[in-house]
Image (cartoon, rainbow, N blue to C red; front, side, top):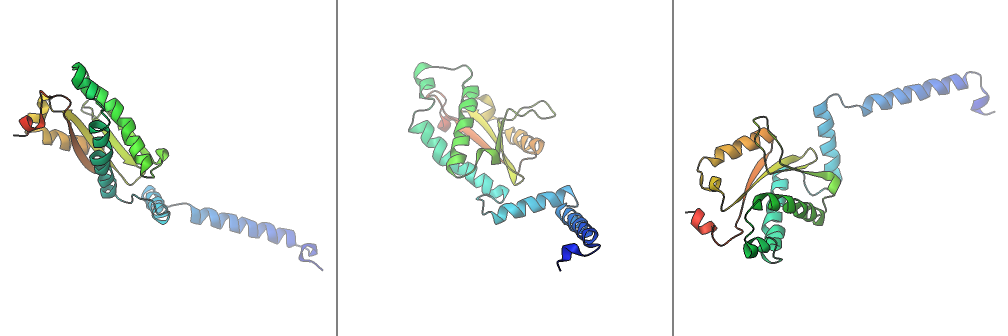
Length: 194
């Protein structure tokens, strides 16, 4: 005699299925938004992803700047046409537009998939200021990048650090990077840094 032929088996099976369904629903739901983020980060740590903290994200972005971007600009000749042809208008805007794709490419080379990071350009703050870039990686953190040319007058402003702190606070970034570009022979970094 099989259990399925017993009277009441079907009712017992349905009741057990409901208990199991309710149990799985109850343990699967996080209690709060913070708990959801905590579970997400724990799952990511178990998947052995490369970035587990805002510091690691900042180090990776700095390495991208020091290695990939530097090579792209100096050895591959990016922006050399600005110097050779005297293109002065909208240099900074052109650099911002083209460098975004270089950050994306460098992140992919380091094993970070496109859907895991977000690179936002010209994000507007509540005080109507705009930041150059904010790079975020899931819930791990975000890094602000402010880009200036050596010809920009703001670069000589000693109070610009306060503006950077405002950008970092306004975007809720964990770190900020001040990236300075020299694209012509007239405005050299050596002249500005003294």
